[in-house]
Structure formats: structure tokens, C-alpha cells
Image (cartoon, rainbow, N blue to C red):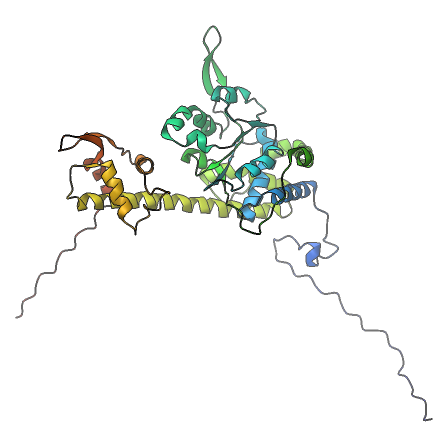
Length: 413
């Protein structure tokens, strides 16, 4: 055997300093899942937690178009529990292009979590505004497109639209004569409202709304079935937690003037949602403002697209008049047929039947142009337009390009 091997003397392992956690100034520290330093970790507040739990319930039952919409719906529902603290009562417009987009299911979950829901199916305007008190309910209208879909129906429900418009702002009562002495009475209209329907609602309502544009679920997108008896107790428990959290904050909410990322009507509509997010703290203030910016920008782009479509219609109508030899009058049916014959235009795909007389009427309404019974040179009467009706709109919105002067021929010296 060889000589024994001597082991080196024992030394303690080197002591390394703990890794530093980098954070950006002005930002909350990362969550524990992102290796947050134990000294900075804290449990979420009740506001953060109840909003997160409510958000999870919406995600369970409905496929919303994006995370911003999920944030917006969650904050809108919470804001209904502080309605008397707000200056404005934002509407929640849940719209989609067709049936089976999840609009009614979303409204089901909203109904079970908002403050004092009042479902207004087939309710008269008189019954609705008599139900609005100093502590207003939350109005819920499903199939709102049936209230405003056709001109005849919309005219019949003009009083309801007026109530929804006026109720967006505090101190806009409606006046009614009542009682045996025909005394004038004031009825409050201020109340938050959620409306669901196919297609856009009237512009005056959309402009006062947080707009959720629903879509049909793709194959593979799954949600839980909603059963009223089984599932509402959990939603009511969330509603009670919202009330317990927000009720003591009423005075604080009234004094809040949260910094807003938008201005004017959009700021009025989103302020209650941003205020609730600021009361909750945590990630909610940042998420709320990001949703506000993204969703208001999208709606502004929608408005621009609609304006561009209307102007395209004016230009195409001028083209039809020119192709017909610029007659003084043209039949509505002939105008529509000519527009739908242009495969390169948006009109053949405007609806299942292309551009219809009703669609044409709606698109031209903002310009004050409408068809009427006209007598044509052949002696027959039919719906039609005169060229004179369009000349002002053409000059204002799509004027003919200025003709360029042809250069004078040059002569050689």
C-alpha cells in the first residue's frame, strides 16, 4: 500500500450576495411568481381580490373579444355599486354582428352581479323612469336592436332613447304631467344601463357607452354552461363582496378626480371605471387605463370607417348620376341597382341582399337626404331622388377635383 493521501484542510464555502432585483422606477414590484423580494411582497387588497374573482367568473362563462374588454366589463359592474358617487352613468353596449355571439350570456352574468338590476324587457318608458330613484337601479336591456331597429319602431321608442341619453348625466330629469290637478312632476333619469343587441345601437347611445364588440366562439373555445339555480349563488356572493368593499368608500369615490388618458365624452364615460380601479390599486389602475385607451381608439376608428363609407356612397351616387346623363331625377330602385352592380364597391356585400332602400336611407340620413314620391317624365310616380338634393353634400364632402390646366404649347425661337 502506498502512503495515505492527505486531504486539504476544510474551508467554508464562499458567501455570495443575493441577486439584486431590478425594477423600473414608478412601477410596482413584480409578483411573487416573478421572484418578488420577500421584503416587498404583500397580499392583495380586498378590492384587488374581489375584482380578480369577478373577472374570473366572466372568463368562465363568456369568451370576450380581448383582455381589455374583460377588464372593462369587470370595472363597469363594480362601478354600478357606487352609482350615487358618480357624475356620469356610463352605458355598457354589448353588440355583435349576428346571433349566438354571447351577448345574452354576458348579460346574464352582469345581471347577477350589478347593483339592484332592473330588467326592462317590454317595459314602457313611463314604468322605467318611475322605477329610477335617488338610489338608482341598474337598467338591463336585452335585444335592444328590436327597440331601435327600424324607423317605425325607433320612432315608437324615441322616448326610451331620450331617457337613456338623458340618464347618462346627473340632474337631467324628465318632466311629466300627473295627478288630478295635472301638476308637473320631475322624474330622475340618472342610472347606469347595459344594453345588448345585434348591430350598433343609435349613435347617441354608443357615444355614451363602454362598447363591447362580441364575436362567435371559434372551434375549441370552451366556456362553462350557465345554470341559474346552480351558478347564481356564487355570483351573488361576489356581488355582496363588491357591496361590502365599496360601500365604505362612497365619500372617497365622490372626491376622486382620477387622471384620465382620454378627454371629453370618453373621459366622462370611463371615469367611474378608472376610479374603481384606483380604489382597488394593485395592477388595476394600469390595466384600466390601457383598456380605456385601446377601446376608445377602436371606437374612434369605427366612426372614421363609417364616415368614410358615407362619403364613398356620396361619390358613387354622383357616378351613377353621371352614367345616367345627369338627369334631374332618378328612381330609388334604379340608383340601388346601379350601386349594387359595381362589384368593386362595398355595396353588393353591404347585407345579404346588398344595399337596400332601408340601408340607403340610413346612410343618407346624416346628410338630410331622403327619397320621396316623384313624378317622372313618363308620367309614372315612384320613390326617387333629385340631383339637386345631393349637390350641397357633394360640394362639402367629396368635391370634384379641380381641373388641371393644360400647359400651353411652346413655340421654338
